[in-house]
Length: 276
Image 1: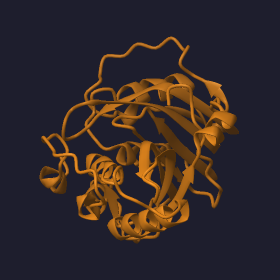
Image 2: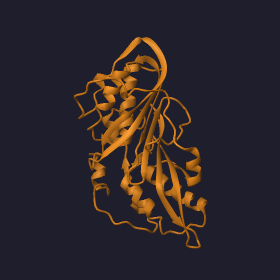
Image 3: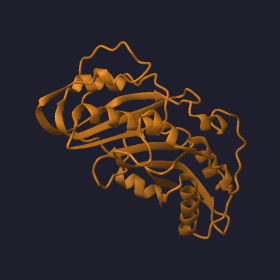
Image 4: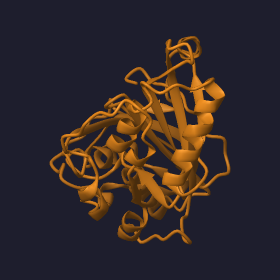
């Protein structure tokens, strides 16, 4: 368990406060998990963002009429802190009986509070249900590897030694799997997700990648660190010219978390999948 998480509201009974309370946000430093992976804030080999989507966002207009919407929050991957997910939910629920003059004033409040907690500027977008409905659900790029015939016997921790590649061939491709699962390191609740690997480098053996992804099944870690671990293990193996790894996790408590990590300066797209 992350040492700071022991003091968070995660896994504990909590009172739901329905009036604006920014102190509910609980930052967790990334440094300890970076250190586990041999990284520091100065040596991160990737760029990226954590997209959080909130499907339980509501507040009051000056007339007293409630509004419902969907919030999109983009937290830089190199921010000093992540925001513990239950504290995020409690904070968002504290808006339920709080009045805002307009959507822009709510966005400004969210931006200020979340940026303070993360330690770097957080981008905030409040979107209508009509906007989300118009976009619909999307499919992941590239080939799905879930139909490959593999044998699996280890589910307790990630096994990078399973990964294989053909370094006599250089390919550029996108592949994905919907079989990513890990467990919350505090509550042991399952975290379900889909993962995408896009790269140019030594040809990755798809069956070995699927075996590796499945080896996370009983692993305990936060979403962000699972994606960073996958990125680093693939980078070591493939020595790629470019590499992007991202995961789209199923929502829990009205929030989904979607970490993106890449060697490239690219615009990351926050698109919803069928399970989201």
